[in-house]
Structure formats: structure tokens, C-alpha cells
Image 1 (tube, rainbow, N blue to C red):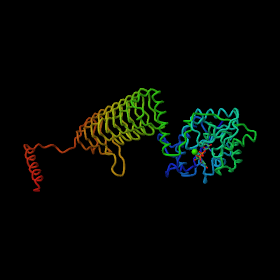
Image 2 (cartoon, rainbow, N blue to C red):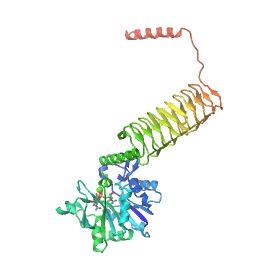
Image 3 (cartoon, rainbow, N blue to C red):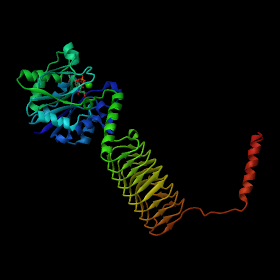
Image 4 (tube, rainbow, N blue to C red):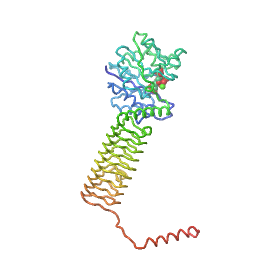
Length: 451
Ligand code: UD1
Ligand code: CA
């Protein structure tokens, strides 16, 4: 059965107190909207329709950045969830499969749950995802009659008996798309909120002789985000789960609670992650690498056996080959560090290629930016870059070459050459003692107030 997703994302999210549309607030480095889209990825949806309102342009951009085939439809006025779904009708006019309605602010519905809903469609027309709530609060309640779902009542419209029900509506619904739109068309707004409730389609379906049922999932999946505090809670839930999955996959974490992961962090087995490491988006770490304490990584690849940190910063485009070493207070950006090369102390390597086994001395800087453009630095295999070398790009240092400490390299260094560019040293006999005397006298006079 082909699947279409309808993702409701038109709400403003007033309680976020933000200029950013709610669904674009990030959990683990990805907008909540993308988490929702990702959860349905395994179903290989043929169409994805995002219903946007507030900040529709930005919402659309985020949706298509994740899936360029995603379509955005506008809901200019937020008249309720049924009204929101109705906006997708035109875009799915010729679509013959099932539609799944998701909320853009509910990031954790699992792929398995969505699959279970699709499977349940074999026996029923409308499937609603429910969960047993510890505190049912203001959620809509699922009124079951045996296996059949007879209706959903919104809290505001529910009587005491219905409010006592703990089986709640997550908002996720699955039905044949054409049936869903027929049902939605029949929804009115005669209720406590004066809104078009999507939840009304269940009763309408029953009246039409269609069957409805519920599939249930754990409450943790249905967490919706309405405030910054809930956003932090969602992130914490994501982090806890992702850390556990990594540890189960063979990653050692000395202090897992202090490691921050992104939605797409990949870390291979037998890797050690020390405390307080941050993984931004698009990081992959291969087997047996070590990421030492207080390192910050984003958009980079760390190969087998590499050691990073403590206090290292790997920025986008960094590629560390096998058994490389990147030490403390080193920043690397858009650079390939080849096998066995070492950049151990206080360096900036940007827009560069460091050849295999090269040794980059402390304080080395690639001067990659001239104020307008960025330039490349090439460092040859087995070369030795002396401490505090400045490499003024574009420039290259050959294989087996050396630079003297403090050298400002402005011309290419041939293979096997030593480049040295610094003022020759002069020793002035006895001058230090004289200088000390002068300085001490000055200080003495100053403290007396004579100067
Ligand atoms: C809804 C359900 C309720 C359920 C709860 C779960 C209805 C009538 N009620 O209530 O049964 O327990 O979710 O969280 O469906 N949206 C639009 N356009 C609109 C209205 C809403 O895009 O016109 C979007 C919102 O941005 C949000 C989602 O739909 O992402 C849910 O809307 P919301 O107003 O939060 O519904 P609830 O009142 O929480
Ligand atoms: Ca809500």
C-alpha cells in the first residue's frame, strides 16, 4: 500500500515565545518537523504534505531540505485539526493509497508504531494512535467498545465518565486518503472550541458504517512540545535513548549523561567517548577511535583508531584518517588529515590537506583567509612543521620537508627542503644585566611617586 504523510505544522506555538515557527525548534540538532518526517521514513511515503501556516516559508524550506519532494500547503487560518487536514486534499487528489496524519510538534512516534498502524488497516478503515496516559490531563479520550473505537471526545466536550478514561488520543491517524478527506469534509465546528476537530471523523466513520480502532504506543512516543521546557525535556529523552543505543552497540562512555548527541550521530563500536563531548550534526566516528573530554565535533568524519582532544574542535569538512592525533586546543575546519598525521597542540588547520605521518608543531596556523577569500594549504607526507609556523595560503609544503619554528611560510616549500623565515638571532653580551638595572631603577622611582 502506498502511503502519503500529512504533517500538521501550521500552529504558531505561542508558548514557545519565539519568532521561529514551533516545528522548526530543534531536538538533537534537527527541527522537530524533520524528526516527524524521519519517523515515517521506513514506510517510504510516496507523498509528504506539510500543512504550514505561521512561518510557512521557513517550514517549507526545512521540509524540502530533508525531503525535496515534500510539498507544502498553506492553512492561512488555524480553524482546527480537521480543517488543517482538509488543506492537503487538493495535493492528494490523485493519490490512491493510505494517508497518515502526524503532528510536526510530536517528534518521537516510532517507525514500528507507524508500521503497526498501517498493518491494522487490513482490518479497519480508520486507525487512531492512542496511549495510556499517566496523567490524561486535557488530551482527547478514546471511547472504545471492545476492539472498536466508537468516538474520540475532546476534554472540553467530555462528560465525567469520559474524562475518567485514560486511553488518550495522540493525534496520529491513518485511513485511506480519499476516505479521510470525505470524513473531514463532514466535520462541523459545533463544539466547545468552535474548531473543526479531526477527532470527529471517528464518529462520522461509524455512522457511515466504516470501522475504526486504536493502536497503542508508549506514552513517551507521543510527547508533544508546547514550551521551551518541553523542548528541553524532548531533547533529554532523545539523548538518553541515543546514548543507550550507542552503548548497546559497543561504544564506551565514561559519563554518558554529559555527552550530547545529534539526531544523526554515528559512532562505531569500541570507540571511547570521554566526558563532556558535544556531537553536532553530521558526525561519523569509526571503530576504535577515542574522543577525549570537552571536544566539540560537527560535520566531520573520524576514522578508526584516531584520538581527538581533550579540548579539540572539529568543524564541518574535517576528515581524520586512521590513527591520526588531534590534541588539545586544536581547531580543524574543511581539512583532510591523512593517516598517522599529528596535530597535537594549539593549532588552527583550515582549508588544508595534511599528508600522511606529517607532524604539525604547536601553534601552527594556516592563514587561510585573506579577508575576502579562503585559500588552500597543502602539507606533504612525512613533513615536519615547526612550532608556531604560519602558513600563508595558498601555499604548499612538500613531502619530507621542514619548517623552522616561527617561520612565516609565504612561498611553496619544495620536497625535502627546510624553510626558515625569521630574523636571525643576535646575542649582545652583558646587555641583559644592564637592562635589568635600568628597569629596576625606573620601578623604584615610580613607587616613590617621582615619575
Ligand atoms: C489534539 C487532539 C487531541 C489530542 C491532542 C494530542 C484534536 C481536535 N484534538 O488536541 O484529541 O489528544 O491533539 O496532542 O485534534 N494544527 C494545525 N492547524 C490547526 C490546528 C492545529 O496545523 O488549525 C496543528 C498544530 O500546529 C499542532 C497539531 O495540529 O501541531 C495539534 O493541534 P493542537 O491545537 O495542539 O491540538 P490539541 O488541542 O492539543
Ligand atoms: Ca497540542
